[in-house]
Image (cartoon, rainbow, N blue to C red):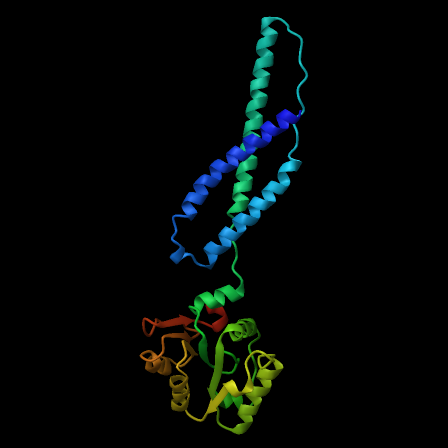
Length: 270
């Protein structure tokens, strides 16, 4: 019985090796320069699956050795041989399916984390400037800020992730000091101004749109996020990448300007 179990295990390993040879050949045709986060994740998943497979091998069910039947008439011998061939074919088919299941598990797509998506989308940019109205807040005009300031709950996760590895600056035009205080209070209550993340000194206010444009040019960010198409167009010559936020999803204003209906939508969070 031990010999039969080893034979079964050997056959399964051979089938898995055949499948892996094809899969690995496809994977390693990609050059290391072009490997992205998804490829690295796939390789990591492959390594984990291999370890898992070796762990389950000792539990492979052993086939019970059929009892020897006494020699009978030739017709009976033919029936026994046919039954043995059918059993052998069924066993091989079952092993093929089991090997295919293991291979399929190896190459299940690995879903990237939000941190990986943010870094990939921002092309590893280290400094980001972002308008507040219409992007971080529900309000879309300075006049509305004179009444209230409401942080969009859907944008929180993305914004906090950006602050983990980017030097983030928020900026907005306000009509009075009370509006400024209202915005800072809303950001603080939402946890955006938490320790280790965005600090109060990096939330900038001005009284004109020209002032906001000047902020961006002085900071020289890798990315600027805005909902004003005129400012986005003006900055296209000076900023490496921009994200234009608009509910209508307009056409791209320049080759280095991306468009999205919201910040969270750009990072696939909705």
